[in-house]
Amino acid sequence: MKVAPESAVQLGGRQLSRIIYTEEQIRERVDVLGEEISAAYSAEDDLLVLGLLKGSFVFLADLVRRVCCPLQVDFLVASSYGAGQVSSGRVRLLYDGEVRLTDRAVVVVEDIVDSGTTVNWLFPLLEQRGPKILELCALLCKERSVLDRQPRWVGFDAPGEFLVGYGLDSGEDLRHLPYIASL
Ligand code: IMP
Ligand code: MG
Image (cartoon, rainbow, N blue to C red; front, top):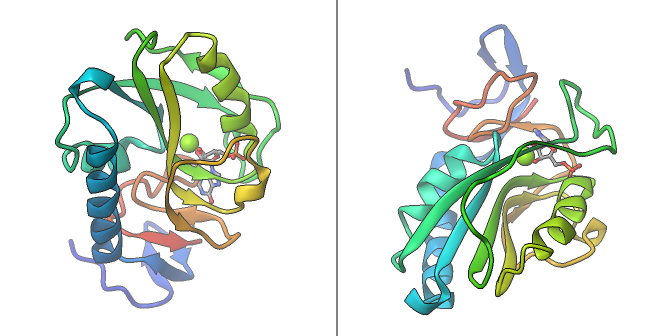
């Protein structure tokens, strides 16, 4: 089913107030990010793309198909939100990846940086595993100044609204929307 990008789209009983980034805008931006990441690394960097689940799964799947240097993919599950719309301020690692980080380039792929709590907590932990390079690629960033270390790649500097779609959820709903909308 195609959902027209009108305002106030009804979906599964939810009201979306407006579409913030269309499928086409996302595709164009992901193409550029893929080119930049391809240019930044070579085979010797032994690139690992490390996705933070669940929110990054759509972005990561599109992004890695635009990267032409050799790479591996792994995932982590960290949780700071629970079912709410406000960060709980506490982060837990619910699932740890299994692929080695030592002596290789690691690009962490995150769906959205909001309070920065997740990334600020995760990066020191990953540093301890001895990657040669550790960078962040966030599809969306609501506020860059909250981050202890600046991301190397940001898809869009997003408005401070609660966003859904393209992997981002509201209480596990709406991750499947091919665009990004404000609730
Ligand atoms: P932070 O720790 O506050 O930076 O939030 C990071 C995580 O919260 C993200 O990886 C998302 O999973 C979730 N999150 C933050 N803002 C939003 C939003 O607007 N919509 C959906 N999820 C969000
Ligand atoms: Mg996330």
